Image 1: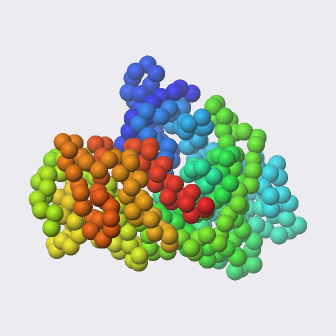
Image 2: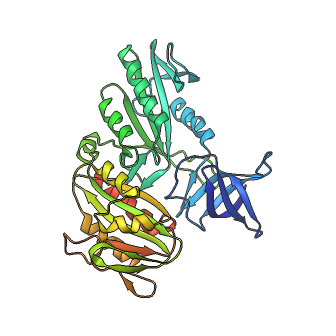
Image 3: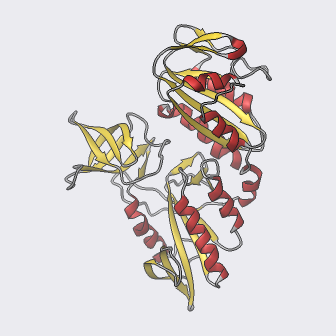
Length: 377
């Protein structure tokens, strides 16, 4: 293994990084997750060298503070098998592995393990979780149609008389609570809750050493299912990220014409209902402008929305925290006073960032706190 500094992600499966020799190389990333909370410019990667094919290197792991996170998805079931055979998962200690990668009769879905206890079969799917913050952990970090299909198929198998389960393995020994990541994939969260009486859910925490070997420590995480219907609703907050590649003068409704420097913009919004439609509307370019953000969105070169589903409000608090991160003025002392906050006492709900906010660790950790820690508090 060799160490390298992460520079940027070119697509889902390729990253650019710098070796200790100073050479810049492209490496294969065998993990399609978003990994925003892990891949910041300058973090340390562990690479496997000498690979054949288009890329000579492959990413194995990434350092997160004093921890390491394993990124190669192909090794997940090897760890799961070790945990199952050592009877380390409470609730599954009495089951034995019959085989891996098994397909139930009449099903189109292949599950990670077929297990058995006293002649009773159990179909088990395993999900590796690298999304953790504080004492909270969630899965997935990106929409997963495959994960939704797994839950639906397991629920169908239950109706046919089988016992079914999903095991979530969290790569952190400090996490205490687990829930599905309903902000990014609300449908996965809905199915997770809907099938709670048909599918048994297990969440365990473990971790890896600096040489990417798995530690022997393991602990069970609580799954506070009662929190899901409180937060997984089509309402809440959102952060809209907009990029201007060049400085632009934009007529902004009642605010008049304003100069917007090049860079990224973070807008804080909310919707008491129909959050999905509000977000989709802010991502589209409109013919008729109503909100301040519509004028800026029309001239932006790129847009991304980050919903925060919650029933507890907090738009102005989130705006204050964005102000603490980015300030309330852009380069050249351009002030955004009054933008997007005509119905509250905030100074502004628009903030400027010279680079992509998703490369800013403070921004991502703040987002995760709202998405993960607050719902489980």
